[in-house]
Image 1 (tube, helix red, strand yellow):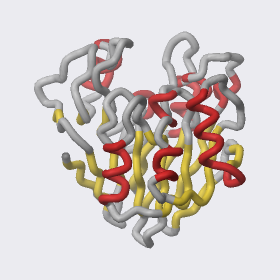
Image 2 (tube, one colour; image 1 turned 135 degrees about the horizontal axis):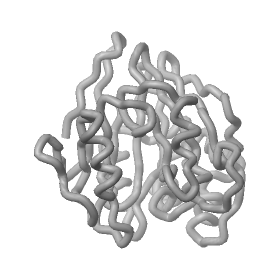
Image 3 (tube, helix red, strand yellow; image 1 turned 90 degrees about the vertical axis):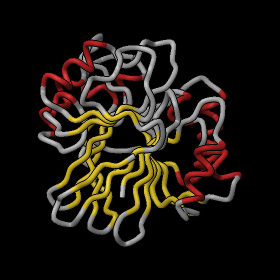
Length: 246
């Protein structure tokens, strides 16, 4: 089960493998972590075996320290291995403590039948200081099902997405350059105009099923899109068949 939490502008996902091993990719929510804590504890998760921070912006790493304060323990923290000059970053580092490890390109973390591969990170060879472009790109695989998580990886200025897309290959759930079947947009009110008309148009042009945690402050949902106004869950069978529900 993959739970995409409704964290407004930001990102957070909880993965529970069939054997009960848990992983979390980002943790949202800048300004208020109560909903994130309630959701994680409500799913019966009191220990996160693996936590992945795609990058160090506050809307992706604000809540790990709050989760720890609420009694959730963390096994291993993977991130890109750099630093960032914010208090949110310092709080994240403190929450990880000695469990923090630098992710390595090509590394595969096993959650039993589920694997998470570090496809690329740190700009995929592009020289840049843009924090979004430094995002970890993670590929989850369970049977024939694949799901990519790429933080806020950009397709322009710099274009890292086109480099990483071929490395990822075809997937079932999201990154536009990989020809996905479905995409989950984790957005809310924001000052960035997300999602852009261009990005949403590319998804629609490829016939991708689009699910929204909330509507954002940019393009409006298409006629066939599903706006959940809440969390989005992906249930995956061992055969690779999957179902996305609000």
